[in-house]
Amino acid sequence: MKIAADFSQRVVVHSDSLEWIESPMPGVHRRPLDRVGAEVARATTIVRYAPGSEFSPHVHTGGEEFIVLDGVFQDEHGSFPAGSYIRNPPQSKHQPSSEMGCVMLVKLWQFQPDDRTHVRLQTNFMGSVSLEGFKGIHITPLYKDPIEEVSLLHFEPGAEITLDVAKGAELLVLSGSLDEQTDTLTKHSWLRVPVNSEINAKAGKEGAKVWLKTGHLIDVENQIIRVQNA
Image 1 (cartoon, rainbow, N blue to C red):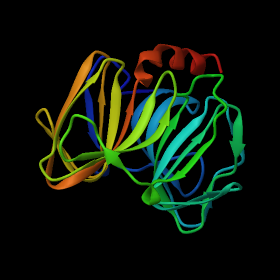
Image 2: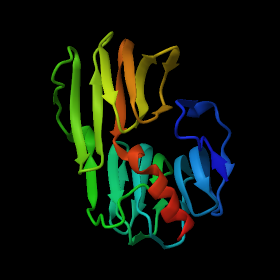
Image 3: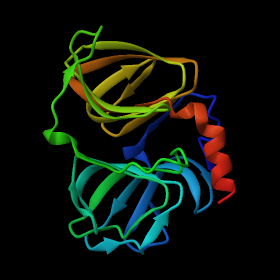
Image 4: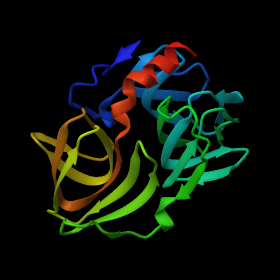
């Protein structure tokens, strides 16, 4: 299966407008944003757990990264409410569930194969600092390694940013709105830009809170090969 699989193209998806698709597990539904592969895939997806639903125990051979958008996600490591940012590296395992239900942005098979770093953050209780060179924008760093960087950007109303993203980037609007080129990105809109690109964005009248990931698309061909060889 291929969805938004041409990584040389800029892609915008207003995920709240997509239909929910059933997963192999009852009560778990998906809105795919990009995907290369069948059930084992390099994928970026909005996932919804109905109250009381769960997935079977499994190993994340290629790693799993997610941010909880609504509700509370649970596994044997704890309960993770909205705002939680989690990285389960390659070869990690768990049994996910949600007693009250939840919605998450989930990314699979987008790690370096030797990464073994677990990350569990509750971003709603983390501070931020001014983003150097930009007025009215603050940053909350979440993760950084030699390949990629993940952060939250907090825009005041009307704040503008120009980012040189030579190794590609993607973002998800968590709240507020952002104008980027000719698109207005609202809550849960997703943008992916290819390598050797720029992001030129301006926050709307209510400002914006944005999850941003940069650098990882330089390795996308290797990510896909690792899935195909799994």
